[in-house]
Image (cartoon, rainbow, N blue to C red):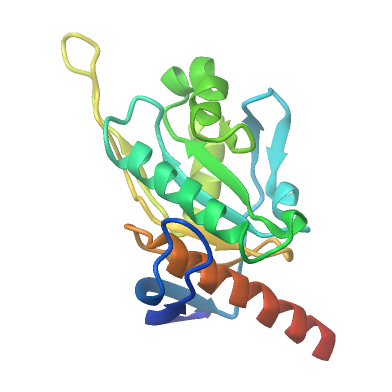
Length: 205
């Protein structure tokens, strides 16, 4: 059984650009030890292309779950991730920037608008959704949850979901779970160090 390290890290952040102040940033992280494999699943991205666990291999990724009609949490987390990626451009090469994946757990409403939704935040973000059976495989594999409520008489329903940001590595395994709000500079520094540590570990194996 994998162990989990629960960390509250104080990361020293250099003032590398506008909006990044030098100092210490607290970030809340849970790291599975060893990194946890993803379950097999088959979803579709916002371009209609298959999205499986293989799409996580070969690069670092940040994944969060939600739904496109979410009024507050999802836009907040995605905007947070936009700033994290911007801060990472100051620390790593363009080819080392993480892939960002938004998992829409309300396929009925998400599918028609997913492409426009993710593009609103960043044209490079990937939006994925699919059947609830396949969504559950991915969501449970990244230690998340979601629940679709029963429709009321007008057909409206609530969607509840976790808001963590999951970090997967080039090996396609879960390396960390970040709890929002994300300090952009602190998380960018953490992820850059994570990449360096991963490369060193691979060289030593």
